[in-house]
Length: 315
Length: 161
Image (cartoon, rainbow over all chains, first blue to last red; front, side, top):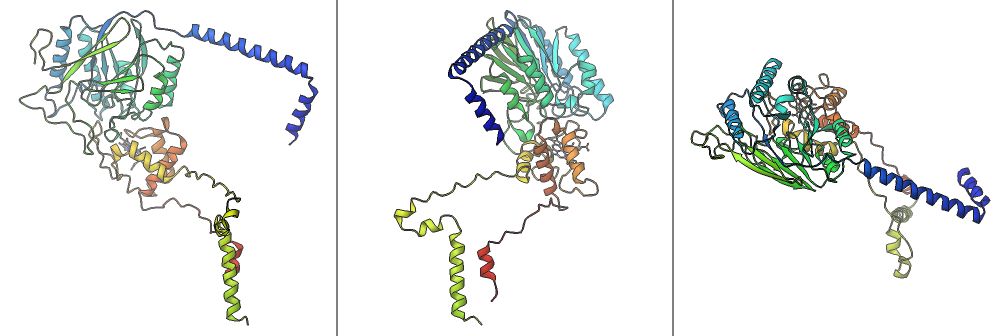
């Protein structure tokens, strides 16, 4: 009760003239302050430099180390894909590998061997590559061995004017988590919305089908951080089929696997792959060629292993 | 001794008073011109109490059912990367998994069990613990229910003689 009384006393002590002068000064200070602030802010927003057109390839869900009916040689289908990619013209600048590089195993020894095998095969392809973990690579040990063999679970890089962010929504469960979201916010806060943004991760950043873990628990929080950008594309894997979808201003693309296809989502049944067919062994397997234009637009072409590609009959 | 007719009329009067204590009753009884002068008190908006089993059930359907199954019996719709089975959540004993331990596993994870504390709020985690406990026969989370407050009129009505 004493607070309001004292403030009234103060106010009544001011003369009308004094009050107006004070008000004017305050308005002036606020206006100049915010203008200074805005100008500084606009200048501080970075773009990632001039954009030059380039090509890259998305590979996903390779499952090295898998033994079973769904794919009788995961190494053979990976090599088929790498062979076809090597004959692409123009050549891709790099590969983006969106998780499940290896088949999950309870044995740390086997997981490390599989991750090293993946690294060996990709190194031999002589094309630079960027990876993010899938739950098969990382859920068992929260990504400890993945980090030892392949590096950070999440990171960013700029290529020819495009900002790439590799995200981890698998190693501690199907979510990004508060810490990673904070990191993303830090990366993007000072970026101009003109910067083309490409995100890549294993699980979808929107709800495809939560009963099969085809979702990211805090995907909406991440999407809220990127909606202000004019061009945002997400490349992910996990669902072993091509799915494209738009949320807000963001385009989401699930890539073709090289391991095995999976059924369409929607039915409340246990998720299971089919045995590899004798007549169509490469059904639903492939990779994706992505061309980025000089203005930063993204064009995708999904290539099936069984297609005749680039003048070479394969598969 | 009070005669029966007195008791009867007393209880009728009392129940009239009791009825009148409900909002709207008096207004409805008034003739139309008076009715509109009485502004009913706004009913305060009811907030669901959180953390709650209901919030836990909704979170379970979104984030646990895939692995633990819709009934929490370990029959989920998704296979773990190693092919291992996922434990049932409907046969947890108080000795093996006291409430605190359940809460800790949900928040911190365990092996391939996700560490939900990285992404959920303490309130969401508490709701999930309440829900998981409710799947089991053991110590259902006891809620202190206050005995209903008796209104003075009701007490009058119940007075013996």
